[in-house]
Length: 364
Image 1 (cartoon, rainbow, N blue to C red):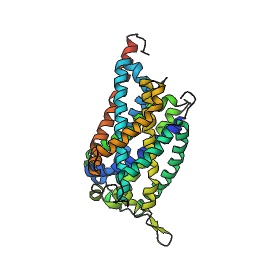
Image 2 (cartoon, rainbow, N blue to C red):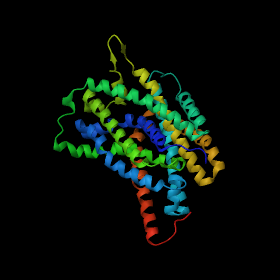
Image 3 (cartoon, helix red, strand yellow):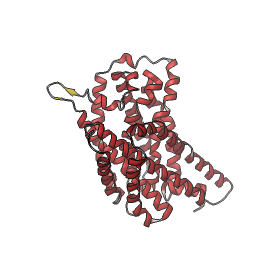
Image 4 (cartoon, rainbow, N blue to C red):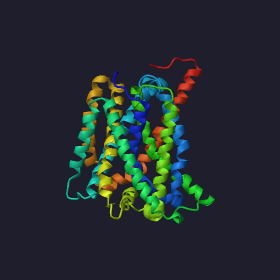
């Protein structure tokens, strides 16, 4: 891993592309149910707390070993390894869950007679093939995926805004703000999955302006989620958004120009597999980095295969149907990621500060 380096921009691109799938799946379903027509404000309101969490992870990840090394130095070797194991189990759980949700989406897209195992096997095999190679190669592939996904996202959201009904999102009164503030937990929880990218920070070549670049990527991500929810609620209405499985793909049904191109939702869903591929690959690389920190380089090379096999079996046997997987993705995933992003990194920074005040040297 010593010569396998990526830039901070590539890491941010990986997280942006990977988190698009859980974001468009959960939003605006969760926010519209709580905030009604003010749901689109949650993307903007999510920026300050996510910025604070990003600062904590960025600060803790400085130095050798990325976030894994930061936890060991701050908490000590025993507690640091225990926390690292917790993150590793969570990443494996996400690998199972996201793989099952991807397979279920492909079945509902028109392959109802097929087995979810087939779709899951293909995607996991592709992600595993990349995870057994260099992170730098995967990062370059993720940059291409970002361009494709960004174009598709802009196309779908742009057409939805052209077909929008402003009265469904405006005006927003003062009494609507408490609901929007409460619903902001949804986008914050979903995007908090980016904390796992901190375990790849040890392979990032630091450059001046990385923190500023991270703030810029976060701002554009929150703005994209704002436009997504604005287009969905303005086009479909808040009550329908709260009931539709994935409003983004419903919005894609309206993309088209008479006499030019129409009904491109199948194309959108096909290309959206790129986001699933990037997210599963990012999780495998994060598990690989954590395994290397816990068990050494030998196990780091073996961990992607073991993780992919466990994810395949777990996705099929832990989540026998799509309903159970979707329910967990709606409440357990955001809640767990809030703890992992807003609980443990600030606690580790506090422990490090107390250790420094006492004059003790940080543990190795």
